Length: 516
View (cartoon, rainbow, N blue to C red):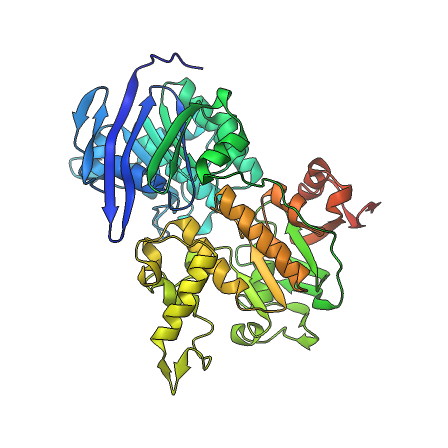
């Protein structure tokens, strides 16, 4: 660990940033040493991303100052930040989908000669950086055609291409597979060894303990403290973050499943990107009173399976029966009569970002007599309903129910979707990455809510890339590999290592313990 007297490369002193109805950063001081990995930890809406956006020039603070190498600097915009060697990978990537990877990396920092773009030189530099740090990407692929893990590599290469020495990672692992997370952690450690300084926003305690030298904790916009990771543990950090002891393990009784709610038989969904099917003849049941989890490495057909079940994609074979009714060719609206859906992509399929929070809360319910009369929305009823859900699920936003969804933190957007979907009281809940981007306090609450829904007789189909969540929340695990279910496992009788073999395609079976 570095010397306590190590020089600070960045100091953010007494930073205050306000938005309508909320003080996002309230007199916060943060010091980053040269060559360290410094984690910024806090609940959803604690002010972490806002503070880093101030450092990157996206926001101007109402009070406080920023120093680099002891000198006061003024960062009016991201160009000023880049000139000072500060780069940022945002939680929601800032890439242009229809541009190639190479074009995205050099955009805004193009090498020109006599007014002509020098792409060959840029390509050589990017290829050298890619090779050096093990960040392999297809430079000629369009961003819209690559995985989110690859998109993140593009964002990191953008920073390296600009020779940034201070690297900000905002929730960098929220959309990555376990393997990609391990690769990113190794890359961050390599950056630190080379003398780069890293600010790492996260609320995943395992990752912070694994890579960070120090941790600064924020809670509700205020500075709580900075600790050395070698002198603390996960429970202490979660207490600092939430302000109370947090149950880090899922507490639940054994499941008592009853009738089949969802019956999937030889279900096939075609692939958009290659010839073989994304989902190939998949069959399984989900019964009332159980949580069945689809596990697997990202990109093995889980997304297409959910799209097919919820009606977002058309299937090409097999049947889906929900509550005894064939819904294979039913519309999304018809399926919604018996199904709640917490989607994988909260921006694309979960929210209308420019609607208010209260409008988003009634997206599927505004036709109900409670919320409309003779075609006119009963705004008072919508407001009352939204306020109840906001309080129950602790959805934090600057202006409560009238906050625009786009302006909320990613974690609070997620909580809003979960609140809406669980309150719809449907027999089947399809929950895809339900705790993505949530802090430990929110995860504890969401897990307890899902278990409570199970105990009330709901059928829950969970899709998760978080192996801890898969093992602790599931009653049965179905592992997907290359579009097929290759194993059915009992979480009480298997290990993460065994599940990993199925996920990698090294092992197949029809039932847990019955190897084919």
